[in-house]
Image (cartoon, rainbow, N blue to C red; front, side, top):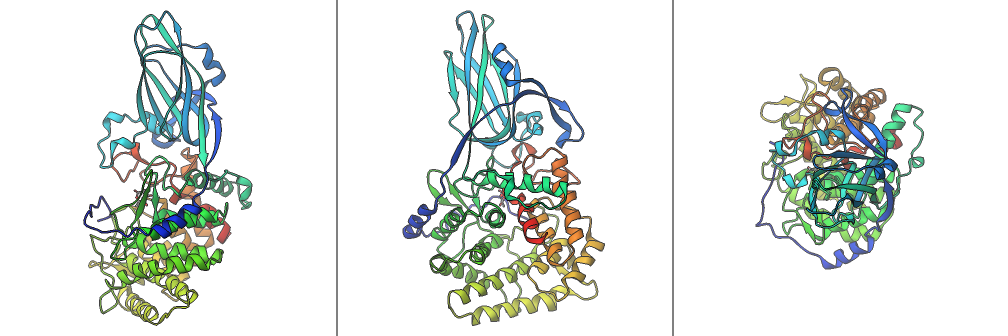
Length: 521
Ligand code: RAM
């Protein structure tokens, strides 16, 4: 099973006001820019695009002013690019006096596919409230409408529910006050020498920029909050591009200031009006707090951060080491799962073991840096690594196996390679490519990132590039302006939530080509 909703209302949290105050000093300033809509477009059937829906321009936005709309009329505004921000528009009445209110329905979409989907059909397990829609009444016109809520979109569909037979409504100046804490600037990217890769890189950078708000959000449409797993990858892509250090520190300090009293670090933090740690815990996400510190300190020296956050990282590591049995196995626990990917189709026990090894190595580096004693952790590392090599590596199959069925899956090999457990990574990944590719049943760019990185680490550069082109490249072909939260190339309409209408089509953990190209090309 993978992660679904957890309700752990009995968990007690720390709230370290000193660390929160420090966090506040790192909080980034948002930058704002007004972007006008470009065209009015209409949906068309286009089999080359996601769910077979594309758009075609009908007229330019300047021509909107001359038109008036009545009951059941509809327009779709295209802003020409993905934006995160607040939408505004001028509404005027045309004709006889207003003898009834105006009712409009507004729908915001990152992709045309969302506009084609019928909201009423949504019956998934995530809240319907994520669907980006508004129903609005206006008793008098003209009105300068400024929506109070931030949306994430390229397209806005405006449906006139009704005016009255006596008058119509006209629209002018559709604008989004676009926001981010960085400015998207493709000149930050190096030329890979390959047009397709350059295009993928740009879409990756745009994705990252849109998700860099006051925190590294996972997705500006949904969940609009700070998840550790996403943060780790965003921070890496950020070092390879914008290299904004304060936002990383802000996020790290938030997790550090609000860990659970038992030592676990929450999987995500709500960062609306109040800062609230979620009562959701995932073992791999909690442990990646260490990785984020480690990655940061590899790039930027920061003794103060190390001394502030090291004790918190240590408690998290100690908590997980307490779950390891005397043989060195880390059992899979439904109540404290390893996430790894949204797919439920593979066993994650061995991936969890490898992630523990991966993090433990980084933690030992941090321990040395902090001048603390590493003996306990060196010993633990040996125990869990020996277990992986002796019990989880099947020398007949020549693969790492996972779970009671001794299943061979891609994720176990990938994480063992990333953890540097086995002495022949190249051989292991070659066998993985030969026997377990094409990748099946993996649903997230998050896991595809780890597969790709394992290929690079193992020296299989051509395979890595091939995978990037067939995965991220396919999203571009399907119309991505920004990369998506979930994508299964065999089943492009897949959603982890039961319906693509709540999928996020600008999702942080998919931005990693920016990091991979910088590091491995
Ligand atoms: C979803 C979001 C987020 C991810 C978690 C596990 O809610 O997509 O990005 O980190 O799942």
